[in-house]
Length: 192
Image (cartoon, rainbow, N blue to C red; front, top):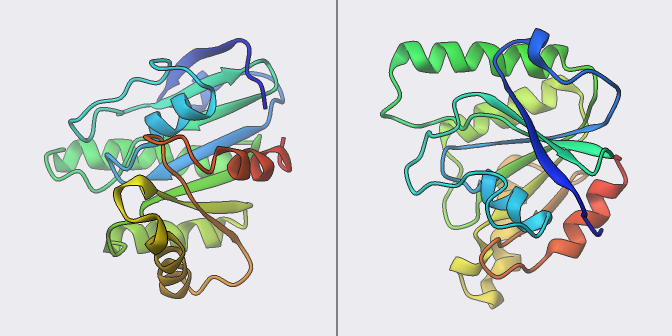
């Protein structure tokens, strides 16, 4: 997909602030520092539309990126960041939950997992939450450039077994090497 005019539209903490209209929303969920912002920048072939940081937990609001007035990438705050206070975790958890329950235009959830690590308890909770939502989803095993190419398929299979996945899409991804992008666009285009 060729992206011509992507733009950041709004950061929201309540449904009153969500963009109006009917554009499909592709929602990104995952741990802090799993690479959601880098994923957006890679997919739209821009360096800095979505702000990235080496410090986990920087995204504290729901960020909506308008992609050529065709759909939104929606970046949810990451979970599992230990330096966030309990109060901050509770607040961000509430507006994430509100969005996932009441967002009317959610077309696909993309659940990003670090391919190098065993899923955490928080990852398992998010996976269960996604299943209960009955929304379409796919899993991206991000940071595939950090392991040997010959091990990528084995790690994807390991994660399939961990989550008990036989029916949903699970794909490797790398923002660093910009590989696997076409496979991911092929899946996303089914939902926009």
